[in-house]
Amino acid sequence: MSDAFKPKAAGGDDRHLRRAERAGALLFVYGTLMPDVDADMGQAQRARLNAAADVVGPARISGRLFDFGAHPAAVLTDEPDRTVSGVLLALHRPATTWRWLDPYESIRGAPEADDYRRVSTIAELSDGRRARAWVYDFVASLRATRPIESGVWRPR
Picture 1: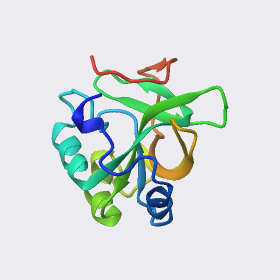
Picture 2 (picture 1 turned 60 degrees about the vertical axis):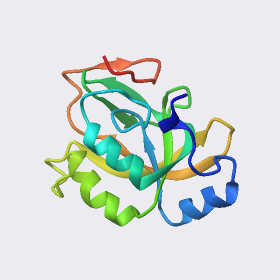
Picture 3 (picture 1 turned 90 degrees about the vertical axis):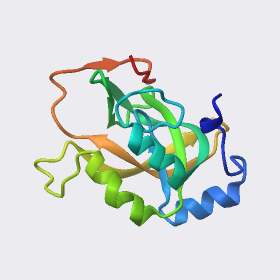
Picture 4 (picture 1 turned 30 degrees about the vertical axis):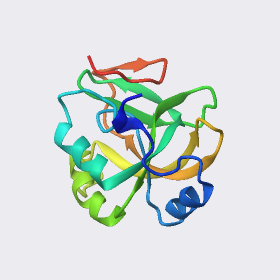
């Protein structure tokens, strides 16, 4: 595990997790924004997010992951056997982070033109704890992609 991926806050501290959850400060990331990813795409945003959040720990959500080459896209689903693996983060200042992170995720404020939408879902940590977190759910066309059956994205 790289140093960037080690929890900065006590990952097992349920009070910290619940406080962040109540504040709407939890974010599940699964691609170029994961702290331990070594990808060209999103380097500046990843560094900025690493400074703006604490790693809570490895987690997963219900969904399907799709491969767009330089980045993945998650589509939420209720299928219990379909999961996306990633990392749960606790944002220091969520409102400030959304202002720059939403545009990076192609959210322009016009739902018919947006590639993603930021939605709330349940993330399950590797220790079994569950918390409500924000995630970027892909809403654009999946025609030019293929599913990542493992639910785990790695840069090429």
